[in-house]
Length: 240
Ligand SMILES: [Zn+2]
Image (cartoon, rainbow, N blue to C red; front, side, top):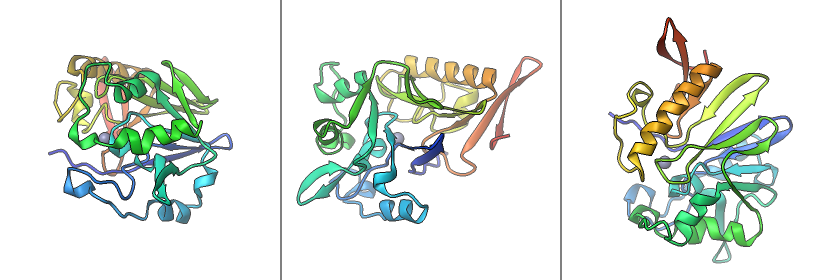
């Protein structure tokens, strides 16, 4: 069973605040009733945790599906405007192009109707978006790296905090079982062969660095640590 949650992550490191994957956002018409015209206390919840929209330094969208970039913007006087006015928003260039122009030949799925216009283009128009060409340093401890497959321009977030490594892997994985068997399929995926290769690569890198992995949609305990003993890769829940 795939047990999915929809959540964002806030990383505070080296005096900078990074928001990863700002969920679906409020007030968007959506083909899936669960997401239609949401009215969630997302900003209020951030506020209770001590973060105001203007405090966010970076917003990283692992990819441009609706549930990873929605709160990029919010409605003000009938217009979609950036929610985090002091942030740089980081998206892979190829991901931006894939959803902007259709030049990759891929259709925009129905569950993403209107997302580019509502949640991406207003940020670009406001001059707040940086399009990464592959690996890109967000700040000294945070790097985004291409991890294609789920979407063509999917990126993961590599946090290196004093030699402790954490990978925010977005939608490369929807269930920890895919760490052990990268062929276990979940709905979607723009290039499945590439996605399987990406899963393998991420697990290898995590083993080499002793990194923990955090997938976008997995519930508590959220993190899985990968390690190798006697040539066998093992996975443990939590940071380890
Ligand atoms: Zn997702």
